[in-house]
Amino acid sequence: MPSQDYNDYRREYEAEGLRRQDLALDPWQQFGTWLAQATNACPLDATSMSLATVSACGMPSARIVLMKSYDAQGLVWYTDSRSHKGQDLASNPQASVLFYWQPLERQVRISGKVVMLPDATADAYFQSRPRASQLSAAATAQSQVVSGSAELQTNVHSLDQQTLATQVERPKPWVGYCLQPTHFEFWQGRPSRLHDRFRYQYGADGWAIDRLAP
Ligand SMILES: Cc1cc2nc3c(=O)[nH]c(=O)nc-3n(C[C@H](O)[C@H](O)[C@H](O)COP(=O)(O)O)c2cc1C
Image (cartoon, rainbow, N blue to C red; front, top):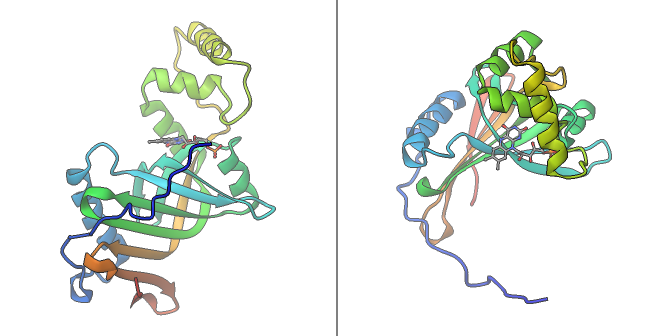
């Protein structure tokens, strides 16, 4: 097997620093400011986040999902609950998400408890999606083994024909989840590895902010 090491594969981070006095007291406000800057700096993928879950037997697993909304209650994404993440969350309703905004040399890490959103919320979002996305979500069971792409295409075509005169119903396993954070960490790359990191931790007195060593 060809091998290569990446020992010298590194770069300097040149961005301006993040100072304690620049931080919002509320992490949601800080997140909103950084997300707005990220949507300008990396418009295609600013809302994509790595979502890490842990199975009942303790095996972690990460994948990208798209954040669809956020407010003081938490961060929302939609998925098929039959997937690995869905199974993990059923037995261990906690998760960590990570946004990496490369042009800004920033990452944000958020973790906490996960709850499933009410059916009405998932219905409303599902009906706002393009019909082709609705069909593929409704005609396939995410993360299950399939015989080939022909099986997927046949299932989608068949559902399309059956629903020509109606709307595509949200399949019951297709749901929304909301991560209710107890921790945020804002990371700003800085020269010579002296990165700026601030953690917000929720406790009895509200959000406490600490600077962490890089
Ligand atoms: C840019 C990008 C965005 C994605 N967005 C979603 C999403 O919003 N929801 C989703 O279920 N999967 C999304 N996926 C697919 C997931 O990464 C993953 O393959 C799928 O959810 C199955 O993962 P699991 O079996 O580990 O749960 C996205 C993948 C990429 C690369």
